[in-house]
Length: 74
Image (cartoon, rainbow, N blue to C red; front, side, top):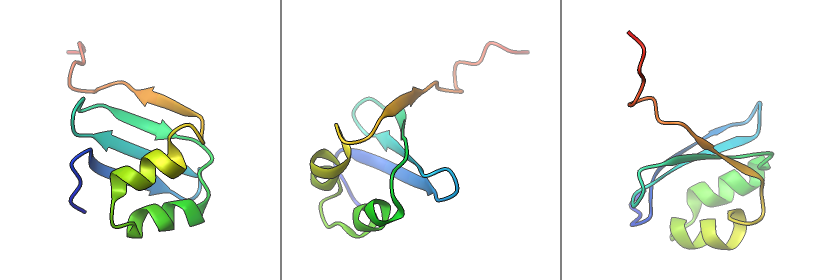
């Protein structure tokens, strides 16, 4: 899945949450209530960034995921 904007993505069909990691920011976001058909189309899309911008961004609620790299626990 080479993409200049999306580093990787995962989908949980039980919760219908699509997790997307972006190249530029390195951040992860979870997109909520994404239908399995949308994920299947995204997975097979030739241009992942274009599909994401056209069919996912601004179409589903999302939340940023805090990075676990900066954990202050001992």
